[in-house]
Length: 100
Image 1 (cartoon, rainbow, N blue to C red):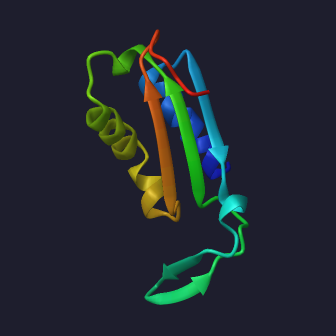
Image 2 (cartoon, rainbow, N blue to C red):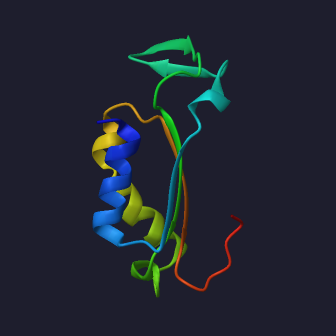
């Protein structure tokens, strides 16, 4: 199973979202410098390393922006430890304005 699918399944199970998009943005970061295992490398944009998570869930109602981000980061901690380099999070409660 792909990292993206694993993340989608975890987010669905934890937050029962009414809207969810997990977008692999790795290709947008080709040519950027990364440090892996203490060595700087030039990232080629392949794989599953950079994601954007857009999620609308009633679970976020009453939570601050920081609390929402913390909840998603904690849920996806294993993926972050296993090679996801960047995670952009756009959480919202139902009825809140989103840019997407």
